[in-house]
Image (tube, rainbow, N blue to C red; front, side, top):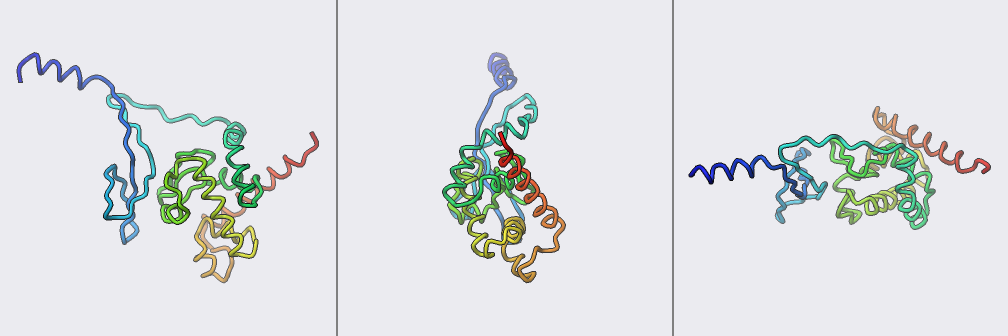
Length: 205
């Protein structure tokens, strides 16, 4: 490589550039999760993120707005999903607040993603192709919650437990909230948010 080419290469390498790539999640037979940017048709993959990679600089973590502002930002999406699936909007807001705190790109260690933290298999079953699309995620989560409400005879506590731990876990424990610490915390948390939002909505203006 001559000196001019070497200099040009050094300049290009030092310039910060931005690339976007789709990130896919692969769940193996033993339950382990792998993230990849390579899509393959011969295995089950779920698109979980559109990654923004910036070379040669560090991007500071996103600062989320205040909770009320976050709730307002997704108010219309939630209201429409609540209407379409016959659920209280306050309930969907309570689930979102507990699940992701209104972070549309939230991704849990187990692979749950988006505002309502849909698991890959659940998202696939619901037809949600992009779990980080707020509208698709909320509508998918609302549809799933409505399905669980029907399955558990409109028992909200059991439906929420099933949303968190899976309906199989609720059935395996005799149609009761499973004794998992996370689920035991989750159900009261959602119900508490739900009751506070209902109370706030019923206050005289």
